[in-house]
Amino acid sequence: MVIIAVSTGGDGDAPKVASPADPVSGTREPGARPAFPGATAKDAVAQAGETVDAEGLRITTTGLVDGDDTLGPTLCTAVTYDNQSGRPAPFNGGFDWKSQSPNGAILSNTFTGSDNLLRSGELAPGGKMTADVCFDAGQGKPPGQYVVLLDPTSRFGSDRIAWVNAR
Image 1 (cartoon, helix red, strand yellow):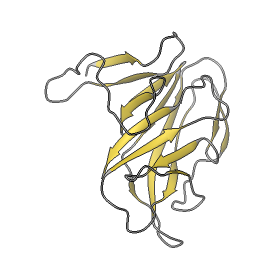
Image 2 (tube, one colour):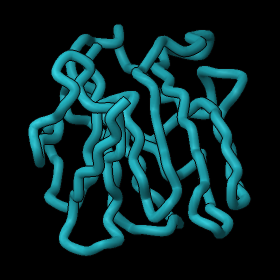
Image 3 (cartoon, rainbow, N blue to C red):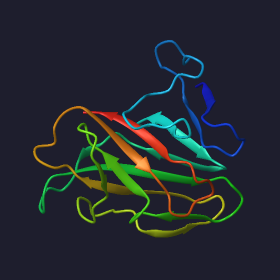
């Protein structure tokens, strides 16, 4: 397996994409990153399933899947935090996560859709955890490009992280 890191900002503390290279060619175009409407130059942008390193806190999201639709249609992603920073890492499942729909609407996460929703707290150095973050899917879950956004209220860095999903 090949691991690469792509700098996404001007300073050394910006989140970096660290993920397996393209499975077909074994490489990724230098500096290439997924794009989405509303992206800024400071955003760390990755494909769903790729890991982003934010000062030693390695965060991965899976592709979006249908959540429990009992209270309305939802889409969910499993989020993994792997704290290799050497200090406690805060996380907030209630306020830090958003989703951008194919029509460009940015919505906060929901408190429904899964029995394993991400809560709030801290992850000890060396700790690893996985939980779900779910979003209101609106009318009929239209196909297209969705973006899972980590826009933290408190985290090591202040840059936004985006995972691009095609559905």
